[in-house]
Image 1 (cartoon, rainbow, N blue to C red):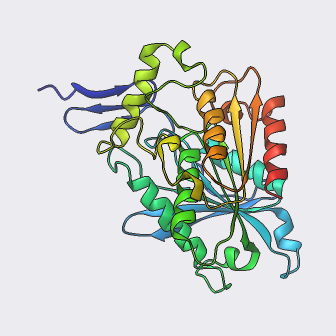
Image 2 (cartoon, rainbow, N blue to C red; image 1 turned 30 degrees about the horizontal axis):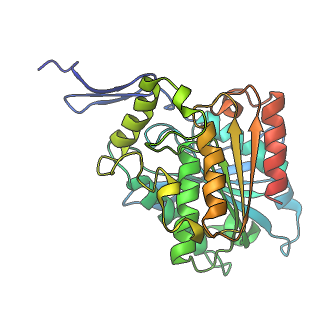
Image 3 (cartoon, rainbow, N blue to C red; image 1 turned 120 degrees about the horizontal axis):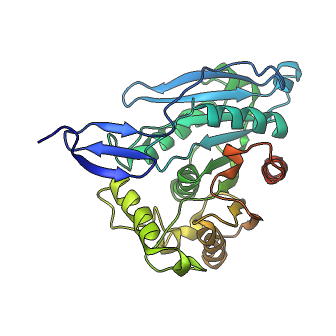
Length: 316
């Protein structure tokens, strides 16, 4: 067997060779934490767990350094995207995005670095994200291991957010919190940017999506979650989850993009959530003419700036 034989090839994202080698084609570059020269946002990396290896990048806005100890800021726990198999919390894409969002919204942020598939197939990312939330919750009385959370973060004003696969995680963590509780954390809302949801039955205009593209999405999910029942797994298709009404927050903001293959899933999510018996308020905003995660590729475009402003007001 040649060591160039490919077992899995997800165009432009990841390749796995038959000898077990994994080649990530995107999302491998990293940048260190910093103090942002323009907006003064500070960041640092923390280790949450050695075994399994879970870390996070923390962000505080410039105002945190000068505010009185009594003034605590809302806390955003952010989960990066990348189809559960690429990207990290130290990727320049996410580092730049969180720097600007933390400055705009004046919040403390914890950007979770969870383990990636296929080396660590799902549910590893969910397990790591929940472990990170339990670590965050350990700071509720101001006596946790991380000074920034003790000093600056209001654990009665917590939000989860993420884009694409990270939005999927944010939803699933909010659902787990609603079902199981998380002592010390009051989850106010979740922000789902271009959420990575799917299903076997097309919704909206999904029938117009080429069959090959629909199969790619279904296959990538099976690749990252090999024990899954498929595209109607409640983790991937929230409409199939009998517990959906137990979502553990008061409000949800769903951001969709007009030309995104996942757009109709975002709208569908808001519809099934309203019918689930959940008592909160859900809002959907759509960016016209934009593709999947356009705001990460072109953060200064008009639609990205407008979306960031909307998210900032939601977090306050």
